[in-house]
Amino acid sequence: MTEPEMNEPEQKKFAELLKQSLSPMKRELDRDLWPKMLQRFDQPPRPRKWLAVLFSPAALSLVPWFDWALLAVLIVGVCLFPRSIPVWLYHF
Amino acid sequence: MELLEQLPELLAQFAAGELDAFETLFRQFQAEVFRWIVRIVRDPAVAEDLTIETFWRIYRARARFQPDRSFGAWARRIATNVALDYLKTARTREEQFAASEFESAPDPRTGNPGIQNPAIRRELRERTQRAFQQLPAQLRAVAALALIEECPHAEIAEALNLSTAAVKSRLFRAVRLLRNKLGNLNTGHG
Image 1 (cartoon, chains in turn brown, cyan):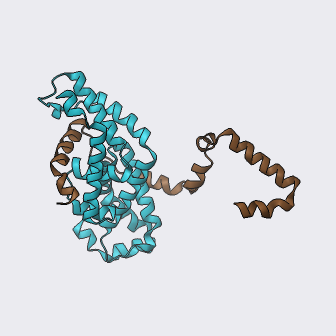
Image 2 (tube, helix red, strand yellow):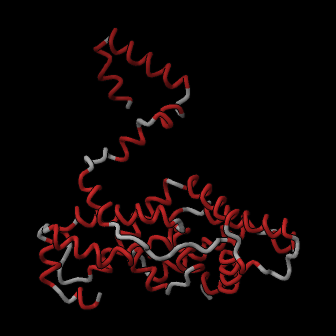
Image 3 (cartoon, rainbow over the protein chains, first blue to last red):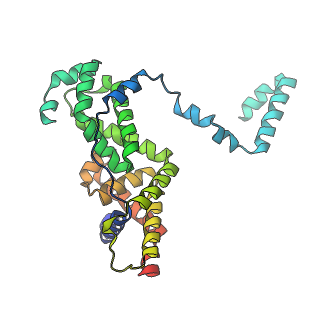
């Protein structure tokens, strides 16, 4: 007997539970979305998502202060001792 | 729709980038794409936005469309990816929506004879909603389509670009996660 087959009665139980818990909702589209689609065509291209996420304030606020301090030390070190760049590159 | 899919000329025009052909396809398929997305994300307002996003991706990918294949199946697959992207990034917003929806529209099907106390019943519904919304996007989509919407596994597999066995496996994992989160419901309230 496979995993999913073993689980079938339980699946029915949870299906019933979910149906009872999640409220009914509108399922049919009641208006034409073409005007909205045309607006989408007029919008400028969106920035690449990963860039937006990487440099969002929320993401930057997650970086601990000592990482910022380490980055500052690294930048100062590279500025003072440019010949150390190959060493840093080797370690990264 | 059958008739439309038999119009290779229109599909060829769309693949060539003709906006009129795209508009015809949009008007023909927007309701179907909306219905599919709303079954996954369970938020009609969001589903409208995601329908637009789906057709935007369809238009951008028009050069990859093969006019001899089903436009409807292709659109559904893209719509599924758009819905999954949304579920991955908007869990918190979904939770807020579900909470307000729960308050405003009680479901008449909640008449579980084993749970008479309204407060307990309400807690049960809230916990179930939370557990459902905390499922990973892929598992949540499979759970919504298979358990709530009762879609055939083969249909879900095609939309998610998975095998039927993979759909069953994800369904199993989704139910296991729900059970882990709601495990003591029966013993606690029964």
